[in-house]
Length: 315
Image 1 (tube, helix red, strand yellow):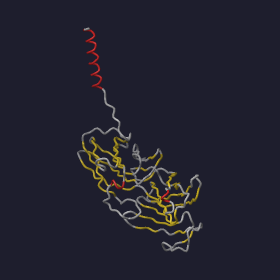
Image 2 (cartoon, rainbow, N blue to C red):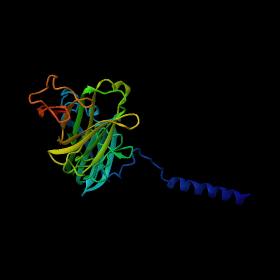
Image 3 (cartoon, rainbow, N blue to C red):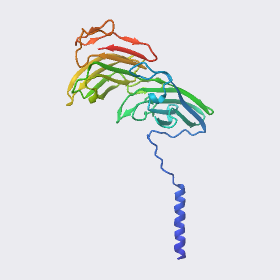
Image 4 (cartoon, rainbow, N blue to C red):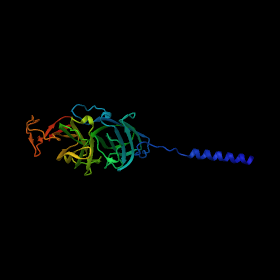
């Protein structure tokens, strides 16, 4: 009996020792978070300013637009000698969205902050190849970023000014969307789905395809469709094929747009007749209007200067 009691005590003691040494398993949402750089210097990053107002259907807006009205996700990534040391991600609705405090050791770091509207966190393993995915496919949305070198020696606050890194291409149909159209496809070459944070420009020659669903309430109305891309240079071009599909994946209408000009923080907008040929008898929208070989009314390029730039062409 005494032997059995001693054996029971030994088992209990052994269990307590193992329990005290066991480390709890912690699962962090996102799965893209590196080890935090060891250190006790507190560095607080705060998004203080957006360089430009949001893309939209008008020029309304100010530089004071809140980050939450522009972007749904923010990634804060810290690198040393090109190697990522830590990354923290925020989603709109998180407490303190637009602000992040990290504990760092003294040293020199490269800081990359990316704000965007993607469905998933930015992929920031390589600061020269920042990408975004949705349903396991590359997907570019309205995107802002910050890149700089930071020397850490004492507690500090860094006020961040984000810069838009994408260009937008937008198509507006003067005619209405006919019954039977179920989706619109953009197929384009010349832009990039990946950008280099050190330069702010795209680095991959992408061949991208994106679809936009046409809902029932859109039928019989003029259509507005757009997409984003990362330009390779300050003045870049795309080749775009715009296609309307029916219920059996049949092509209802298709048109090519070549040498489409794109620039960071600029909307290149095409407006014209897509589903029909239109009419030369209609009142022109600008001086120099003419018809192309397909009978579509086309215009010269117009530029509107504002906080952001709008290049407008009509097809």
